[in-house]
Amino acid sequence: MMSKKELIMKLLKGIETGDPEAATVVNEAKYIQHNPRTDEGSPGLAALFARLAKTDPRVTFMRVFEDGDFVFAHIEYDFSEVEAAFEVFRFENGKAVEHWDNLQPLQPPNLSGRTMLDGETAITDLDKTEANKELVGGFAQQVLVERRLDLIETYMADNFIQHDPELADGVAAFRAALKAEKHGAARLEYWQVHRVLGEGNFALCMIEGRKDGVHSGLYSLFRIADGKIVEHWNTAAPIAPRSEWRNNNGKF
Image (cartoon, rainbow, N blue to C red; front, side, top):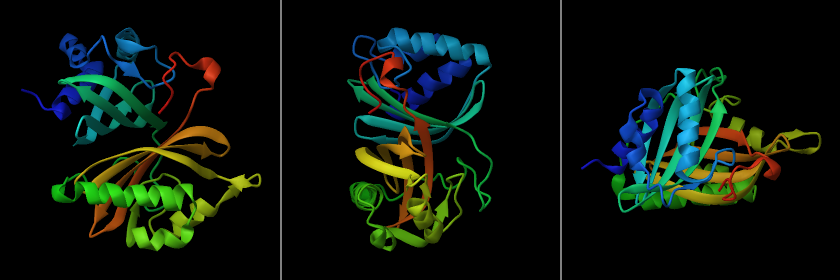
């Protein structure tokens, strides 16, 4: 019997391979779609896969995690352009029944020479999953949403590794990014932490906010070691205006 991780890899790899069995991962009667630009249910998923199949697609899994009923993956997509992606699925009775995602065009390496997708991949500390999720959730709420910048060092290690394409390694660069303004407003505004998922030393925050004045999904994946955040990957994706939504489920 395939694990949830294996099932999601089969489903998404089906975009590349055209495997007709890929669709069997989804419970077509229950599937809830949270990508605002994709039609509801399995017909929307089928239409999306058919469209992407025409782009000579490539799907490369960088990291795949499982948290209870959820599977989340960090992926490089090469469709009509190369993108860094987070994909999140919820399972019921062995089938995928709900989906969220957040994609950003892949950017050049940042000032520290790191890409949006490279870095550590090993999942360790499985016994610390819940503690690490609590740590990352606290950081997201207090530092990102509430802007308690005085607490950054409480959560982040001095040798913090950064994969954000616009930032360099280190706490100072991260603090500066949170303080940065554009046209009199914060460049990065984190409004609400919708979900925190994790496995072992990794935790993903699904956050709603605004970047450069644009309503966006702000997904951040953190790696934790010795009770501190030591590495960070992210994607920022504009959320389509309500008038352009193809389903009524919302981004989150």
